[in-house]
Length: 265
Image (cartoon, rainbow, N blue to C red; front, side, top):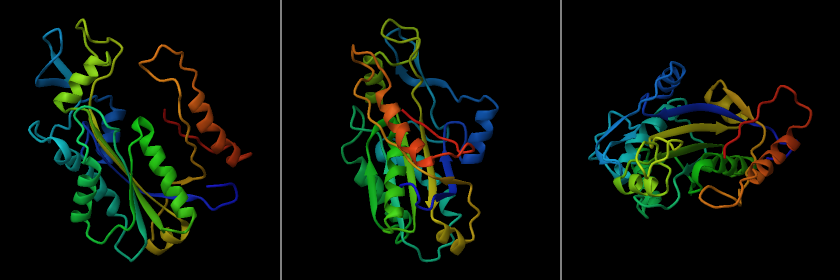
């Protein structure tokens, strides 16, 4: 989206997290300081202690692979779809997924898109997937903004879902010295593996008027940058990619003191 183009608007949200089965419950729990951490029922770390994780408590641990991703994502999509009352429109789908790693099946993207198509037949047109790591949701949002600005679609369902709870993924996290814990192979400054899904429906002013949707916010610009120095290397991390991501949106905003910039790395 370049300067001078009309903004897109956030039309609806959806979420599914370890601390809430929808966006509102998750937001309330986060504000209350609920973390959702618990001990894994069978995975142990190198110290022999149960791994600390943040699972969605309504999904059984026996549910794995694409089925687990679907149980996280589809309820979140349901929440956002509820704002769109089915009037014909050209709706795109941009889905952010984790990059290839141990425990993630190679067919995840295609399998998950098939689940979405089966649940919402005929609802979405062109679909794309993004496998870009932690900033994948912003990359998907950038693609949605570009497609809407080009007039290819009227609105886009931007989705992101991830789960670190596959046993192979947990072992890989610990092997990378990123698992939070107290064992000799664990990192006291590491993270607690979890899972979640988030969805936002974005569209232009005409789409909002047609569907009588009250916008939640306006998207003026999206910036993407790539770090060439990352965790796991000996090189100092200087934030070059973050600086790159900020330059574009800040330049397009111009003198707008009330604007807010969201960043992800």
